Amino acid sequence: MIDLSTHHEYKCRVNLDLYSSPSCEGLATQAAGGRHLRVTSLTPKAQSMAVRLCEDDYDAWLKLADVEQLELATDTYQPIEIDRSTIAERIPEVIAFTQAAMQVPNYYLWGGTVAPNYDCSGLMQAAFGSQGIWLPRDSYQQEAFVEQISIEQMLPGDLIFFGTPAKTDHVALHLGDLQYIHSSGVQMGRNGIGIDILSDRTADPIGCGYYAKLRCCGRVRSSFRSVGSGLQTP
Image 1 (cartoon, rainbow, N blue to C red):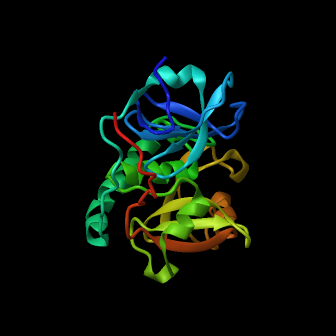
Image 2 (cartoon, one colour):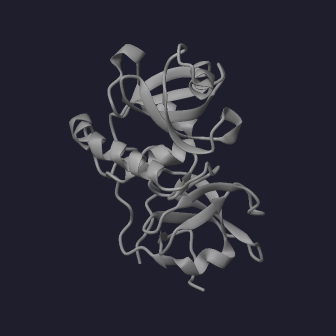
């Protein structure tokens, strides 16, 4: 087992599951191979350790059995400044990522951020991340991160948020002409990635169900910048 320290940064050798509690009973997110993380807490004889992903500052738990799939990072993660014009140029590839993901057999996976199975915000994060644009992990965090716009202002690549008046719980990617692509759970009538239309006049019950939960729309204007913690490299 590699020596672990809260003073160093590590890199995932392979895709790893991360959990929402120390008992590792509920999937919180996934870390694709190549992502960086920091150990935030080490507890002797525990079955897991607390970690924070560097690209989105997401806190979760890693099974100790998976520690061997980490390696010391030779360089700490450095977020890249990306302006809106550069993001706009990359939107076609972001959209293409989601459409390609839809063509592969998949199902909605709570916490899923790696192919083939995603949750709603995991698909958005993976699609933008494929183009070097990092979003926060969860849908409500993504809503707070983007620039709010009206439906009339929406362009392809903008995000659409759904939920309750209190909080967003779902996110989709606008394709144009009020069509959007998203990973949807069985409780809304589909299990996986599909395309719907943002309208209360559609005959499709899935689209109508989501329209009734519409909260707002937003535009990605930058890539998420981790707060960092001044960690050392080996």
